[in-house]
Length: 113
Length: 113
Image 1 (tube, chains in turn red, green):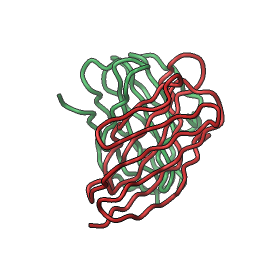
Image 2: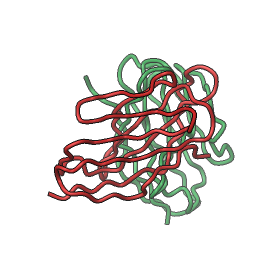
Image 3: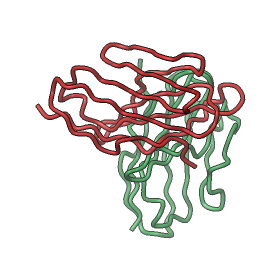
Image 4: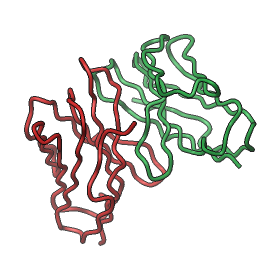
């Protein structure tokens, strides 16, 4: 079963603008991860945020986690054409870090030059 | 450091035929995963190995899917017989331990006609 629901399903912006994607989940989690998938390529890990963390940064990426609302957001600042990809959130649920990731449906981001 | 290798990259078969996919994880990674990604959806975990033992195969359709990691290194996923709904990308991932970041291979795109 899929845990995460991502919103929006598709997003189109101009280069230089910020992009925000949201992820909601249903059960308690150990951590939440964001992945990027370019057309025809495998998934690339972007960032991991643990259940006791509220915000994390990595370069132009900012992730927030609200465990009370069971939601997370991924912000990409100053977007580039190369950021065009599908973005997935994945949750590691259950007791302990099992490595069993449950992925959302993904948000397709298009950044126009 | 070499990434996760998968072969073949593409496979087209008729329904009721059998097919096998191969994965070579990153050297030293104890945990290996197989995911199924249907077009427009996020990946779904099929099976998780820790060394050569199965940790989780709860979502593996065992009547037609099988997987092994005999020497605790590379792994094979087999489908026999294939159905139309098995058309998907099959992703292999590996991690140092279950609580570490998962690194994905490029995937095998299977088309069942």
